[in-house]
Image (cartoon, rainbow, N blue to C red; front, side, top):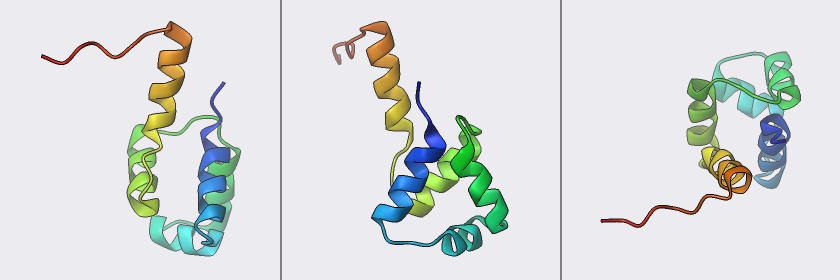
Length: 78
């Protein structure tokens, strides 16, 4: 199962940015950022905001998981 909070935390560390920085960018407290890190899921609106702030498309993880679970392949483009 996908654990989006852990992926966000990992990307923040990869970019060598702090929790304080992300909290400032999200206009929230550090405690809220730590709650995000603990979250298995978050709203799409919040995920979009975080994706834009970190310049990382976190939705791609859900697409990958969907394809793995369904064994689906991308439909041919017309």
